[in-house]
Length: 206
Image 1: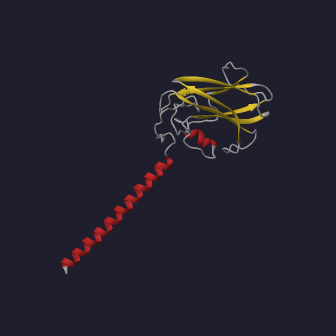
Image 2: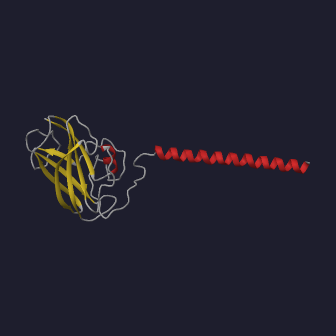
């Protein structure tokens, strides 16, 4: 009887130990999942290397990593609106009905690739007071084909069909066979944070 009692106690202890271990593992997994969800966007870039990597800054401290959680992403310092083809020191409000000029700086290389790249730079604008949902809320403005060598390439595009007056947004999108936009969603904010070749500038036309 003593042997049977001892065996029963050992079996019960093993069962309790197994249950406690399973609970501990479950809690650890849940904690890890919570930590993963709570991690900032710039904790670990998820983009793989590509043959080339041309990019534009979303904020002054941007170094091209994607995704990131920097703010505000709607005032890219690499996009300026100027009254002439000569770059101005600070971006100005575009004038509806006049010829304005979009100035953009393309940076090469970024953190995911290097080398001369050839592709297209496209511009899109939203409607004053309208939606920013991609792509239905955006209107094509211009497309420029060019080659971007290592360094900083300054680009200027004349712009006559400025909407408004009113508040709206402008997107610059660089894309090439070697450096495509990696992800498009209907959310423009996500698209900018997850693609270093997409930049956004909020504007007020007068």
